Length: 285
Ligand code: PAF
Image (tube, rainbow, N blue to C red; front, side, top):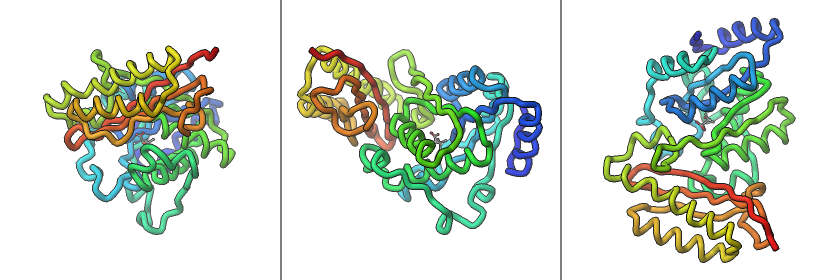
């Protein structure tokens, strides 16, 4: 596996593959790779001939009080994991390569509506940063297919919308969330949890499953279900941001007639913000 750090090197290598008619897959990441990321690479290898994984801790998507400086940077270990997974090329640019003139005067991509609630409301500017860097990565790599994790449900919705609105010729694949045995979704931020917090963390998934069962059984009192789950999160030691039942496609509050529903949840344990989601389909009548 080769690692490149500049756009010039990236383009030179990719032009070679393109001349050979290879389909290029892209897996954008911020590094500190775990089994969830490797599952994305494996998915991309099924859909493309060569896979570019990018590692870039994107400053534009972090708020001022967030963990940009402390975000784990583990390039050597990430390279080893990617090599073992059969990844073709690693693109690991420095911030100066992506934002040569700095962040303040850089063009930004805003995806209205779908970016606005949930994590968008809790983290102002976050999805603008994601949409901007992902658009840049699409332009730099020009992949035929790109793979993202379903764990970031709203992020996938934002990316699908920007691809549609900007006519970007790339297929988007959302890969299922990879979980630890106790149900906690794999995340680079799980490493921030203390042992006690780690033992509490799976409650988010348990609560989503319980709520999901009630939805499947026909319960449409979404407000009550959300309030009960929020109470349980507080009692379980969390500081919840939201626990909300939405229409899986619009991400707007679920209506009684909706059949495809997604529970979106975000909650702090100590300083660590965990997010997760669960989608269900139910029949009505
Ligand atoms: O999901 C992530 O790791 C990031 O938001 C992404 C898509 C790599 C953009 O920086």
